[in-house]
Length: 268
Image (tube, rainbow, N blue to C red; front, side):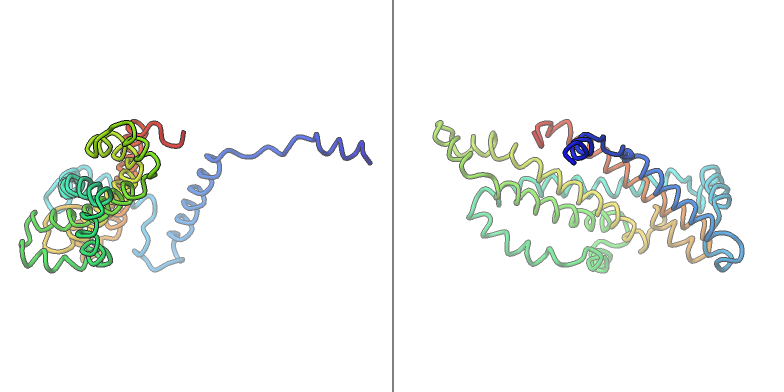
């Protein structure tokens, strides 16, 4: 018995499959389900395009564009609207969030207002954006700015407010002024929370721009999806949705890479 127990204790553990195998398997299963569901006789004709139809439609969109405009122009205008509102929201949200998190007085003034605004869904402001700013670019950028500012400010506030008080007191005991503590201690310590807010804000900004383009836009991925749905061009709808997902993934990866370079000490 002791020998058997010793042998079982020293037996090698079963080899585990790497994570990429599971990821590839999940993608393969999804593609297989697509092939089965798009086969003739499974769903109503035209409801789910086949991979071949999607490929042909994508080649047509790349070569001919949509509604007289190149595909890259639809993608570019959506990215322009997203980045314009996102950058403006971050430029205002990060400093304000750090200030309200560091200063109790500033937090007491701003927090009730943000607590009132935060639960309101951004889509609810689309009619007001159209009413006050019309159907042009300003209304869409203002709407995305609101989304970006809301989440960036909240996370920057949390990063500054939840900073360890012992670190702050240690810095003050070394003779640092409040401004030096804020710039050299609190701001770097709040960077992980700030990047979390930036990633959430960028993802939601990219989602909201599509919703904003459903109303009164003549270009952009949201317009392309809405117009193609009205014309029952289902392959174009799916390609537009796929482009939104792929671009959103690339934006998130880019922001993760930037975070890895700026907050290189995170988790160490």
